[in-house]
Length: 153
Image (cartoon, rainbow, N blue to C red; front, side, top):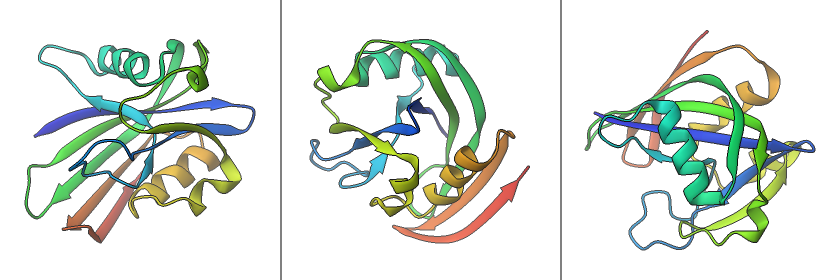
């Protein structure tokens, strides 16, 4: 099982999005996602969140809000559980930071669903933008094709 974090930093009606376009053989290549990454041994999700946001954006989170869990089930690899957060309180300016994962860009929330996203990210992003409720979403993939979505409130 893979454990990871995902953060959508917020400012002025926008989310900071990461266009994954720099790493070869990146499973997310070409997709727009939030920032985050895998938990290291002995790390709490919040420790991973703080570390990954700093590594990928150069920003230090001052506060954050747990929003939910994404469960990814794949036909050809182990399941992944992603602890999802938002933050509108941080120090630093990500536009001044060179990210080794891809290009960082502030995107209007109204434009997010028009980006090249994983299909399973769409219901999660709608939840983030339309509700403050904590969620759990299970996404079952066969290769890159989303086969099933189960949403829990």
